[in-house]
Image (cartoon, rainbow, N blue to C red):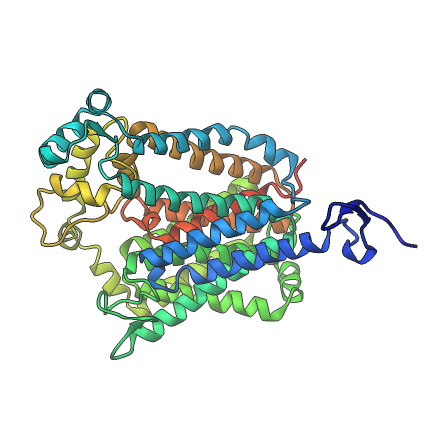
Length: 496
């Protein structure tokens, strides 16, 4: 029987009956089905692409991310029937709308030309620096709160791209299969980065895929220039792989189920993917060790510990008293220690020596950053302007110019001031808090395992950001945005 679903208008505006083959059983038009497919494939392609051209740090590769984000969002807006998030998620995320709006207004205000008298009132140090460095002949009587408004515009567009991608994940990921596909794709890219990093480590003329490798020649870096940013990427992938394994082991199923039963279920869920996750986990851990990143090593242990603590808290400490859990933890710890000794744990430990830490200079130039924060407390120096302004505060005498603060929180605080940083921190904090609280209430074994991996992944990169600038690297920032949005979507999946 032919079913007439809706009436649509033809090219000249006359009404016509929609053909039965144009709509599927869910009432989606052919155009919407194609649009949704483009959104998913486009997102997966962007996630796979971002790390390849030296983590997308070049301006042209950032532009690719921005164009892709805006194009995908345009496809989403063109859908006749847009996917809907769960009512509970929409309700809990309502406070984010004014926060995002406030952040956008704040960034626009940083770039808004204001009379010099107003700038002197709002940010006296900004006016003083302009008076010191801008020639009298170039002054117009107007200025911006951002010392480098062009940089602020570029950084704002980049941030907008990450936000749009996160919104697309929240809005368009509606099935568990989509969640799994995105996570498996991310882990797949992580495994590729690990294998490629190990391969290039032992070549006489190593490369970064498209470019010759010139730095960190003694360390695995994959397609990343800096070993710490490479470690930061793997720090996000390893917990995701663990989360996928936990979900397939049915760890959050009924307590008391024998491990033999859980393992049998694990084997029945696809040998190929199981082997990929298990071997990939080992390969990524190997690459992280051989990156010689101090923070990466510590945060890997932190991620394992966090996942164990969250699991124990969920089960009320009952789980860790089960014999099979203690055996698994013991075997895992022994494997990590033995593997570390095999690949060169001694070299890693040597990088924790006090003289090595002092040579890195982080405590010395953090002092200059704190001075910047004190002189630009409310509005900052301008989003994205840190590298251009810090040189006026550098007292370390380093041979090279410091472009980033090696602490994302200090850098954001110096650029955005208390007002902008507060809005940004509120958004990230609310997302994590709501996601964690919902995770604690979920009972679905698969969703709980997947979200556990996402929470540990987000916590890992946020912790690493205290000693490095991972969130200034486009590939890592984009991946973090997707993981945060996907974890929230997983925790809230079909919650009413």
